[in-house]
Image (cartoon, rainbow, N blue to C red; front, side):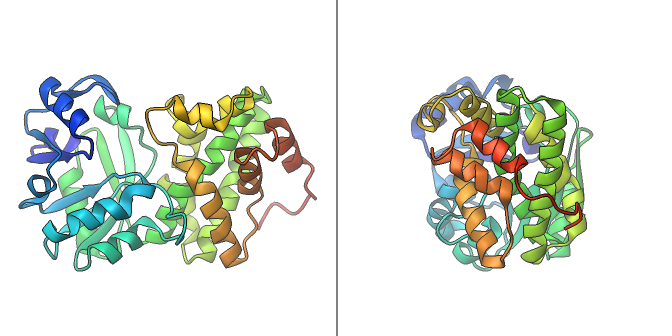
Length: 314
C-alpha cells in the first residue's frame, strides 16, 4: 500500500487464494487492516508469475517459518540482479539462519537488503510517521530503497550492519513476550523498564558475538523496535505474554490470533544461537521455560530477579 501510494506499480501476492479474492473484491484487507482502502496502483494476486513478472524490487514479508518455501517457489521467476528486501523479523528454527541468509541461498544472484525498525503495519497503513533502517552490504541497495520507499511519513536510515539489524529485529519479539508477562502480572513500570533495558543488553551481547556492531542495537532496529514491541498495544508478542500471565495456555492464545507472533518460534532458535556463540540469554531462557509450560509466568519472572547480581556493563 505504501509503495503504491508513493507512485509505484505494486503487486501484493498472498498464498491464500480465498483471502486474495476477497481483497481484490473489497479493495481492502478486511482481516488484517480493516477500514483501509487499497490504492489504485496496487494489484492483488495469488499467482506467483504475475507477482514477479518484471519486478525490480521484491519485498519479502513472509513469516520466518514460511520464508524458505515461498522463496523457493518464487525462484524460477526472480531475475538475477533483482533487489530483494526482507521485512521478516525472525530466525529459521532448525538452521538458525537469518532471513537474509535464506534469501541468498534460495535466490542466488539477487541484491539483498533488510528493512527493520519500530513499525506497526496498521500505523503505516494510516500514514502515521514511521522511521526504519535499511541494511545492506551493497551500498547501491541502500540508496535504491531509500529513494524508492521514502515519503513524507516514512523515513529510512541506511546501515551496512545486516547482522545487527536482523538479530535485533528477531530477539526483540522474545523480550516483548516477557514484557507482556510483566504487564499481565501487574508488576509496574519499574519492572518493565528494567526488563526492557536488560533485554536490550541481552540482544546486544548476542548480536555482537555474531559479528554485529554494538551501536546498531542502540538505534531504530534495537532500542527503537524493542520499546515499541514491549509497550505498544498493537504488539502481538506482548499480547502473548499478557495472556500467559492471565493463565491462558499458549495453544489457546495462538489459536485465537489471526497474525503470527514471531517471538514464540524465535525463542528456542535464539537460545540455540546463544549457545553456539557462548552467550548467556537469561530472559530468553525464562521465556522458553514459560512457553514450554515448565514454569508459570510469576515463577519465570521472579527467577530472573533472583539471579546472581553482577556489574551492569557486559
